[in-house]
Length: 122
Image 1 (cartoon, one colour):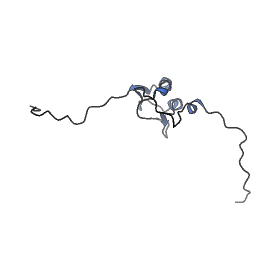
Image 2 (image 1 turned 135 degrees about the vertical axis):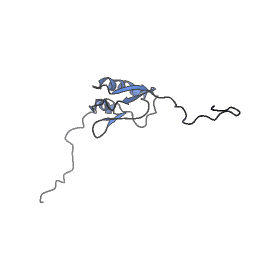
Image 3 (image 1 turned 90 degrees about the vertical axis):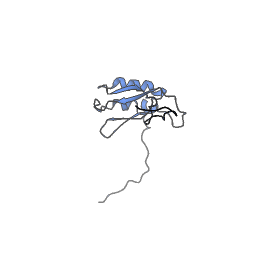
Image 4 (image 1 turned 180 degrees about the vertical axis):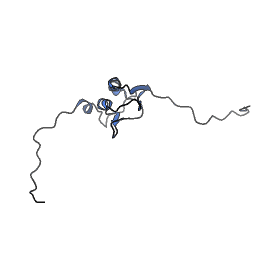
């Protein structure tokens, strides 16, 4: 294999294009945490056809796997992203994305011990 290697320094010919709105709306890492809205995103994996529109509208909380299906960040939707989350839910062509209340604390797996002098069972 013979040939010349171009050793000229790289000089871009045009300025970089402006960022699209989803990238521009991402919160900087140094920003203080926001309040949570009390709702979370839920995906019906059977209904989802992997169109990927939700991830384009809400990249802060949704990314796509290798096959184009959404992976949703666990937890509540921050208040500042709630409008974007509602828009992502509204544009899903197969209605596979929804907003649901964040579950409250669950019951303990083991029952609490009985008070002294109280019998359990029959």
